[in-house]
Length: 144
Image (cartoon, rainbow, N blue to C red; front, side, top):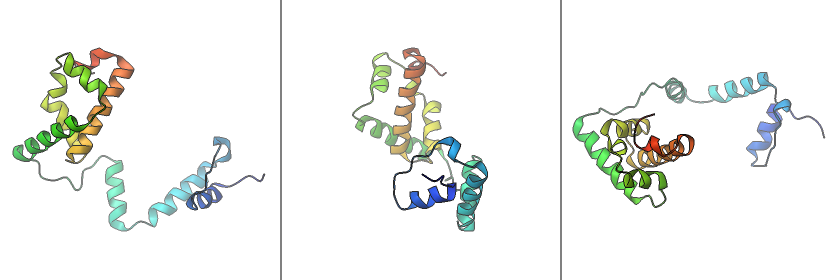
């Protein structure tokens, strides 16, 4: 079997074929060239958006006011209630955790998901699962 270059692997992957690549088979310079090539094929506006996202700069952030944030937080709670499988969240509720209902805690998820309530709810539930799995039940009661 001949050694494939990163560009060959990219072409194969573009055809929706399954590709298994070992780290030793990948040339970092070819990967950089491939990323640069793909990046510069984007429109100027898309490149700006990617760079802003990469650096954590919110370019399309909507104006945040108390009313819209409260509405989004209410929608987020409705979405959390719709999630069927959320054992860490349910456990925190059973323990009487005020932390999971803290406005400051929830606003972080809303902002991270650019004010999309459903995505913020899913992100928060997954975060609680991860924290509980990594650090134990006590992290459901307080910030880590």
